[in-house]
Amino acid sequence: MLSLVIVAGLLAFASGKPCKTQTSNIELHMSLNKNLLRSLETQEGLPNPSVHLALRLSNFHNLAKESEHLNKLKNDLHNDIQSSLSNSQSVVGLLSLYTLALKSSCYDLNTITFTAGERSETLLTHLKKQMEQEKEHIAFSHRPLTNFYQYSLGVIALCVSGIRVNHHVSNTLIKAVEHEQVNDTDTCAMAGMALQCVKDAGSHVHNAAELDTALSKIKQKLLASRRNDGHIGNEFSTGFAVQALLAMGSPVAECAASMEAIRTDARNNKYHNAMAISQVLPALQQKSYLTVKSKECLNEDDTLVLEPIDPVVVLPSQTKVTVTVEVVTSSGAAALYSVEVPKGSSLLEALELLKIKNVGFTFDKESSLWGPFLSVVNGEQARQSDRRYWHLSSDGTALGEGIIDFKIDGAQKITLKNTIY
Image (cartoon, rainbow, N blue to C red; front, side, top):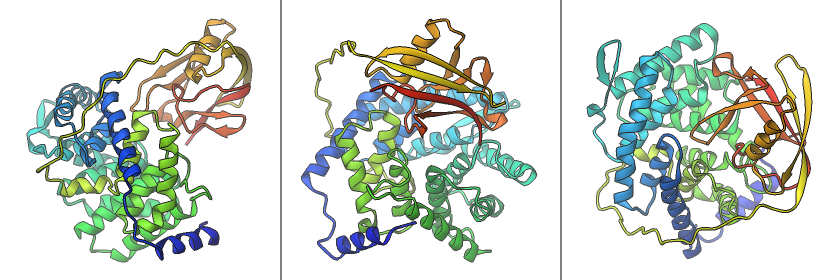
């Protein structure tokens, strides 16, 4: 799916001057880094391990703030994971990100323990057990307890921590790629990094050819989903895709168009969500989650300082726009609602105004690392255990942002559809 035009453009780029980090790019990286640091002061809910990981992979540091955030992870996030494990919940994704965050700070993972069933075991032991449970569930039902994105994260976390990934665990991911169960850009990227780490570790010698085939297929999918503007998938999947391509050995020149698309988005303030910044910052600095494996935490820069900024007061817009909200339940039944909102309102604010109108529309939300997401609409729940979620679209185009980040800039139709994945 990679067009000849893009190939020609990349070849022309590769034949020119070597890729150099320009001063303007360094300034952009520092600006993104500072935005991540500021997010630590304003974040709601649990501390975000993805943000910590990006801060630690950066070339620029504020070690005091990073240390403070690490302590929050070891307390607040640790306790949340402990609660989930005590309730026998599958949290392989969050456990993996916690592992990577700790590893990125060169923290001794053997000192981190959780208790389940009155037995205390190390973080990595729990992660290995969670991965075994996922593998067994795939063997039985042909899908993970969570999803292949989280499964791939688990492989990465074990691999970069120096744990030999069980042959059957990595082979399960290879088969998922082979059987087209790994399709969306984010999951392809994560699976690519996971299998590349396994290959680099030399722990998959039994069927190395299948491993290479899977890696080649993932790379082809990522390159094939590259748009003419350089984005791979969408604006919010490009960061992970670039990370994966670099990890899988693609030259920087092959990723140049995608990296420039990220820079353009960053300069246009597209990445105002901390989770989004945490995915693109490593890519712009030519790093990936696999970089954690060789992190040494020695002689690190500690010059990043946050300048005080004047608070910005945003006055409500006087312009009103009409938003039509369509709710499509799992049975296919649809209901339409309409509400006027100030131009520039977030989708969450629009839904709250609609709820206040008391016209029969209700919703509940839950927190996530990306911010709040819809969990219940009009009494119907979308649960991971049922493989369901609320798919959001505007005028037929799927939203790339969450309900708190997507802005209503004009009259439009928002569709909330209970969808199986």
